Each structure stands twice: as structure tokens, then as C-alpha cells.
Image 1 (spheres, rainbow, N blue to C red):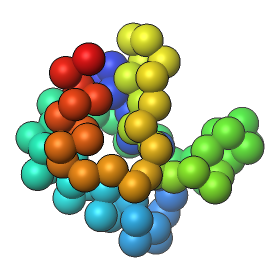
Image 2: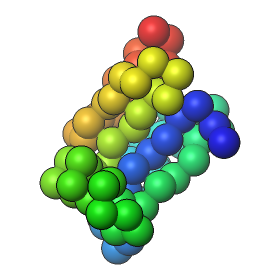
Image 3: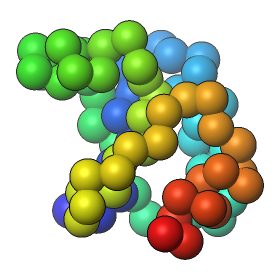
Length: 76
């Protein structure tokens, strides 16, 4: 499992945009987790998706974000 996790939903246009931003930022490999699949994730992220999380230190980057914000997040 990757240290980076993108929390998202099925059929979420903002999540699709986040994926494009991640590609533009040339983010390293990350895992996608769908909040629809687990009640705990639904409660935590349901209204916030997409959210990028660094599992190493627990930092999170909430939408909206752009490529520059992703690169800054990854540089910390």
C-alpha cells in the first residue's frame, strides 16, 4: 500500500478532476479508497471528498486543490 491515499466516491466529477490534478502534479503512486465502501470512511470523508492523505504523518489536503498545492503538500 502506498503512503498516499486519495479518498473519493464513485461517479464523482470532483474526484475525476482531482485525478487529473494529481497527474498534472506528477504525484507519485497513490492508492484510491472509495468512501462509499465503508461506513467509517463515509462518516469521516463523505462531504469532503476528494481528499489526499499522507498516511505517514496523517496530513490531509482537502479539495479544492491544484497541481501547485499538491506539489507543495508532497514537498513537506
